[in-house]
Amino acid sequence: MDINEVKSQFPIFSKKINGKQLVYLDSSNSAQKPASVIKKLDNFYKNEFSNIGRSIHALSVNATNKFEETRSNVKKFINASSKDEIIFTKNATESINLVASTFGQKYIKKGDEILITELEHHSNYVPWHYLRVNKGAVIKFAPINDDGDILIDKFKKLINSKTKIIALTHLSNVTGTIVPIKEIIEIAKKKDIPVLVDGCQSAPHIKIDVRDLDCDFYAISCHKVYGPTGVGVLYAKKKWLEKLPPYIGGGGMISEVKKDKVTYAPLPEKYEAGTMPTAEVVAFNESIKFMQSIGIENIIKHESELTNYALEKMRKINSVNIVGNPKNKAGVISFTIKGIHPHDISTIVDEEGVAIRAGHHCCQILHERLNLSATARASIGIYNTTEDIDILCKAIENCKKIFGLK
Amino acid sequence: MDLKQLYQDIILEHGKSPRNFGKSEKYTHEAKGYNPLCGDKVQIFLNLNKDKKVEDLTFEGSGCAISMASTSIMTELVKGKSLEIAKKIVLDFLDMIKNTQQIKSEELDEDQKIKIMSLSGVKQYPMRVKCATLAWHTLNSAMLEKKEEVNTEAFD
Image 1: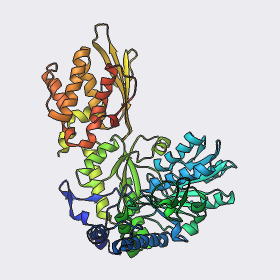
Image 2: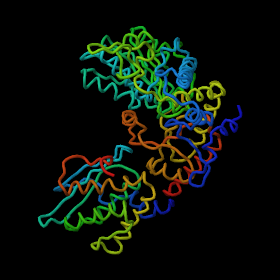
Image 3: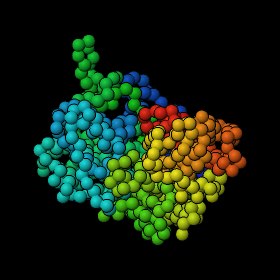
């Protein structure tokens, strides 16, 4: 794989930021878009636009076909059994809310337990919190160690007869921990407990095979997979989508509407009410094709080499502390500098064209667990190079210089 | 944009060694402020004497260099002033950051004006404005005896 060729597919890198070459290290937040995705959006609106599934004119038929092509390709991308198991949502947050709400409605009673972990993003905690408020559910947090790894023994002990669902991330957006999700799902399956996996961070960076994992639900954020904003995916086993009640009600998700009753459309439309982000879903197919064109093995190889390069180089900088040291770490590198607040770091490196994130990254529980109020985070995408890391490290040195640190 | 304008020596120095840091033993007013975007927290302790003069003003909290320096400088400038003038200085400061980049207060001497003006560089960094203004809004809340915590997302 020629990384420069890959990078050249992203128009944004020809732009200057603060007069400098852009070093984009905020892909965990949202990834940049290749030209093929941008072109597809443009072309769809210019030449092919129509709403889907409602009309029988040529444009609508074509748009519907394109929309469904993306669904088929997502199915292939994550190795689902059926297209009916792929639901398009507004974002991964909505995907998780969909499950929490519908599963909660049907299966959660007062005192029932929901098991999540200390690693979770707010979007995999707050939707379950609603069930605590509305249904009297109990939320248990599986603990992690200081390295950022889930303590499997403690996790096992938190599972009991009241545990109704387990929800956890595949890859932490703070520590970069790649969670041994298969092992955890096997534990859950022995007790017949369904598992939701938050795949926001994993989908762009590691191989996803929902059948091999045997997870019940898997949430994906398309804009993190080099795709457009406004689209998320929920993978769910068909048996759940058939059993669970619908989520948002409206047009497109119904079968028959009478004054005294409403019946619902078959899958997957049952969960896709109202006008969908049509152009974005159509364009998302190009993101998957982009991933497929590079190949997940090449992506993993490039990103893990770069992560190791970055970790080695950053650890050598005095006063820099890398947050978390999990057994299996992806290219999410949160760090602190003793004596400089992460917001100051972010502002100063930005001046050098380096885009990183600072704050709690929507993980207040995790930051509290690690006794940190905020961290700076450099996160790697397929387009990053060793040169990007070198520029980041130089910018970190500049922070230290401004703050008079050695 | 100019980093040197933002991170002036006076800001770095106050950020590193904030003045009036720590809870005072005696205070008549207090207020809490929170910036949910970055997690910055500040708590202000204000002691007004019977003549409504700011006898003491201290704070506790954590945050970036800008927010620590801004809070530290604020306590220095407001201490010793009457409540009425303190309120005016706060409004002047917020006006400077948001609009004028000039400080109007006639109550401040030249040295104090230089100090307060050192924070004006933040205007060029819209994402950092709230770092600078959190403590001032919180002091305002303490002076107005408001009960609820100041939240940076609630003001513009």
